[in-house]
Image (cartoon, rainbow, N blue to C red):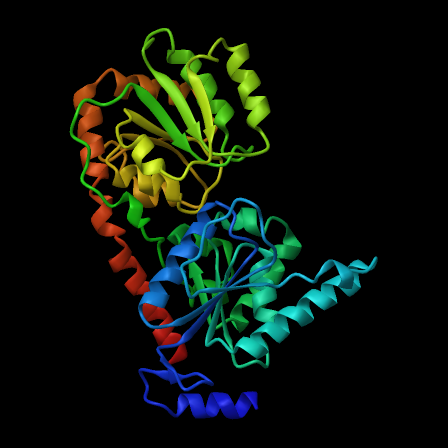
Length: 387
């Protein structure tokens, strides 16, 4: 039945396909990811799913599990949980793995998407293996630092072995190509993340609030400790300024204790995850990104799109340098260098004209990474894959 269906489906006109109920659609796209937790990769997938649905594609979101705080899907996009239910879980890890693989394989056979797009580490391996002999074309994407997603020799070997079996490989920076074998890197494409439409707005032109802001998960990689310690280094010189970090994570309590220990409990704030980040940060004086590693940071893209003066760490993937031209639309500092951050913050807070010039130039990224422009690149790439 499946093979006959796909043959009949492809015999329709080249610009539209036909589902079992006779409805026409441009293609069917499945996304495969761990959850819709409020992170950068998850937001990219949700935004892409809405775009493709708006272009007439059937869209299904396949996640391994569900979390409490997640991004919402647009009406009409179905959600499928791929993890095995508790009653099917056994004491054998090998048996559980086999059942997960089998369940995901069945999902592709039943849903029959033209393309299954995955991201993040082992998810890409699962996508390639489970779509075999289903007619679905797997496309894998590396959205973070490749060395972080595939951190040891075995993982790197599996990536270089399996990725050539994918119908497409998507990277975010040119520097990422060097991580993979020539067989992978020569066929991979660079597709950026599009800007969240909520951040498409005119740049705020009034007097800026004396607030330094950041957005990101409170974990070790984001290195908010560096941010707090650097703020302590300028706190006496700029007594009217505060630091606010939007996000949630396992280091919240530790970071709060650090703020108290440095005497900054009345000047450093941790509001958690909020729905209206753009509204909260657009009038700020400065945005900070202090991560050790990133792909291309969505939070940095969004801050630049709002026209904020930004300071960001140089990350191994080259993601920061893809966005910032040093001294023209932001400042780049070495990762983990507290003194460099202190100097950069002091430089911008003491020179309003420089901060204004950098922020105005950063705002131009709206055009470069506008949803229409970037999402169209993804659409054309997928159309090429399904022919």
